[in-house]
Amino acid sequence: MGTVPVDVVAERKALGLESASDEPLRSGTHARPGAPAPAMIVNDPTHTQEHAVEVQIPFLQTVLGPDLTIVPLNAGDATPQEVGDVLRALWGGPETVIVISSDLSHYHPHEVARAI
Image: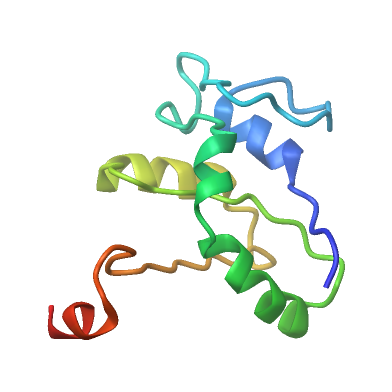
């Protein structure tokens, strides 16, 4: 269904960076001290290995249209406080949609995963 642009301006705001630029951020970029989302890190390899965002995009495009922008996040071992900081920093108002998706495991066979 095509490429979905990352909202780099929102990403920069959460990281406490210059928000006027729409240049993509480099992997390894950390939030500045005092940033709205101080634990946030740009980590391209994480998204390369994880498909959770990609499986949601066709549904979002169907419901919201082709012009949506996203800020893909992987919470990993983030604390509830860190997740809250990021969500507060990225919240743009009623036009903002937050989608949370989770897999129990990528490692167990189907029957074992269902039993867990």
